[in-house]
Image 1 (tube, rainbow, N blue to C red):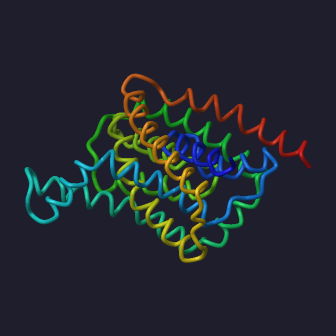
Image 2: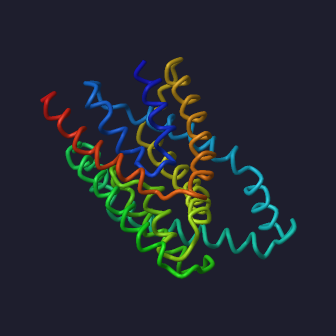
Length: 258
């Protein structure tokens, strides 16, 4: 049962701008469960990674062909790959330099509750100022700026998709452009984090963990699909209101449980 619930939580929150890592911290504590093992967490993240690979399979094929000098526009494909590499660097540097600090934050659920509220504030601010930003195409500098947002999201309560989409809005991208780039940028981030975590722990391969992983992938795929449709005509601030509510509620429940 626990693996099923956590799989759904991971899949639904990985791509929505409400922080999957934060929810994987607070949900077990709120329900009185033990912290999920590193191996189980890796499996659940791999479920959402597979969802990404399936959903963006055509884009990934085009990027691969472009890297090999084939496809319709190899130059454009190589440019996107360069942006993804640049956008990934800040998180890699932050993870290597401050890995121990970030790991300790996962053991402090009250801080995670505060960070969820901070994510909500970031969404409101980035939406407000992003609407005023002059529309500009993605370039190296803007990719690096979005990458800094992803680096900040290593903290469990700071949403990776929220930080990167918001940074994209501030950089002058449309919501749909920022969201699509955020999702592509999450592929190396999730894969890299999963490999590092796997080196420290063992996979928990049971019937329940496999079911949780499958549900994580299905929920993640649906989240990608509907968020891309949602952002075409809607603001991200609706997710901010959810975060403003869940942060204090989670803190109260955690305090009540002692």
